[in-house]
Amino acid sequence: MFQFTNAVISIYPEIPDLKNQQKYFHSGIKIENNYFETFDKPILYAKSVDGITFNNNTIKTNKEYPAFHWNKKEILFERVINANIKNNTIDGKPFVYPAN
Image 1 (cartoon, rainbow, N blue to C red):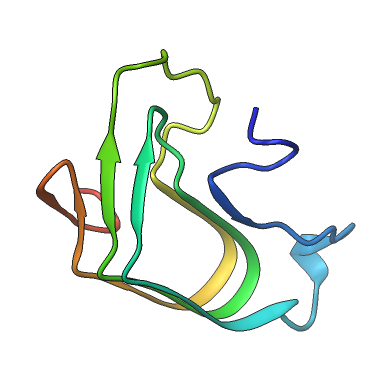
Image 2: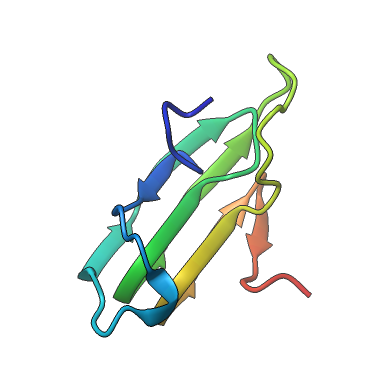
């Protein structure tokens, strides 16, 4: 189950009171020009980030195992600002975030 995380890439700091947090825990994260092959949906999860880039990544899904993760979103953010997500593909099709 993604070993205590919510996606293949998880930025998951332990923050007891996220709602009242004054500053962001992480900043300036860049995930670019990667190839991911997975059988489940969640690729990126981030919590408490000011500035994250997810660009020019290729995601391929396979059917070798059934999907099982509770998170059915490719990208899931909690308290994230200044996100830059563009030029990504899933199974050869453009991935638009947020999904329409």
